[in-house]
Structures are given as structure tokens and as C-alpha cells.
Length: 255
Image (cartoon, rainbow, N blue to C red; front, side, top):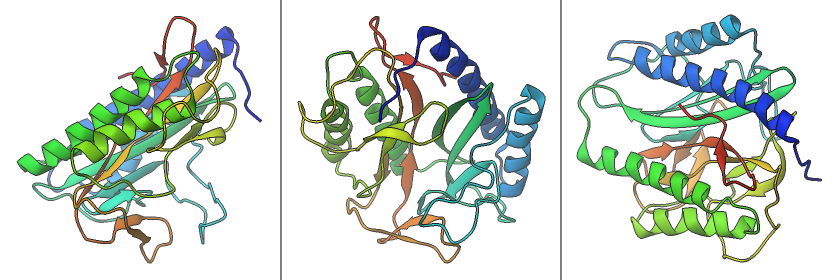
């Protein structure tokens, strides 16, 4: 069932979304050659504590996971697509890093992600990240009252496939509100004009993921959480929490 949020609730979700935005900005600024992934997690955790917010990631255990997620920040490096567990790995020059973060404040949740390169970037990595960001922008542009979920999916998929990149099958965006994952699902590829019609008060986490090698295959790492590309190529991830309103899409996690 899809819960339509009131304008007051959307304002409250914006406050949660801004905690997310600050944490992602702080983690990105802290990321440098020699910094460990655990240190990035602690930076993000500090933003949560300062805001009086909690993490919907920490302790989260969906049906596929062998253990609860042990951190507040997902950090996925190079061929990791999403759900990377922060560990002792220290960032190296040229690493492609995707960070995904959520915050719960006042009973409402925000969720967002971004990708970047540490140190000296490869041109191919910048193109990959730029495509993920363009796909996100296209998905958001399609998130208007009267459109359908398929219009968002089609907009995202058109950008990703047009650039020659793969899209991990079965993973995409989702509704969000009192819980991190709510109905409806938001695929990253689909047919326009299909699926649920978008209405004022729907709030969606829109999140394209792209695989540089052009194939869609992925597998879970031994930790049971991190999803990695089958072909070993790099991946990028971009995400915002977006409210559907009569005046157009409102990005609640805007940085």
C-alpha cells in the first residue's frame, strides 16, 4: 500500500533529508588517499549524533542478508555497486567510491547516495559517474503528477543504456516515508506509460546504478551484503529522496 504524505509530512521529511545531505557532504570531504572506510562511517555517524537523528541502515537485516548491517554508511569501492560494508580498507589514488546514507528524524526517513573519485580521476570513471547523475536527473524530471512509475524507469534506463552501461537487474528505487523501504518499487529500466500513476504526496527514493562494462551481472561478496559486478568493471550510484507535488518534484535530500 502506498501512503500519500501531507505537505506537513513532506516538510518533516525534508528535515530528515537535510541530515542525509550534510552527512554525505561531510563523508565526501573527508575521503582522501589513506583514509579508511571506517573513518568515513564515523564522520557520517557524527552528523547523525549532532542532529539527534538515528540510522535506518545500522542493524537493518532484509531477508537476503546473513547478518544485520553493521554501519550507518554504505561505502562501495570500484567494482562494488552498492551495500559495501565500511572496513579497514584505506582509500587509494583513483578509487571510485559510492556512498549511500539514510537518516531517521522525527519518525521520517531520508535516503541518498553519490559517487566520486578519490585523488586523480580516470576519464572513464568521470563519464560513468556523470551518467549516473544524468540518469537520476532524468528520473526526477519524470517524477510529476499524472506520470507513471514506468515513465521514471524509462527515463533512467534510456540514459544508462544510451551510454552503453549495464544496469543491475532487480535493484532500483523505492517508496520511502516512516520506513526506509515502502511501496512502490521504482525500477531503473521499464516501459513508459506503465505502472502506478504518480500522485501528489508520493515520496520516492530514485536511485540509478550503472556498470561500466555494459553487462548487467552481479554477485554478492563473501560478506553477504556487498554487490559486485560480475565482469570486474567499475560501478556508480546516485540517489535522491523526491516528493511528488502539484508544483513539480521536490528533492528532499538536495545538497
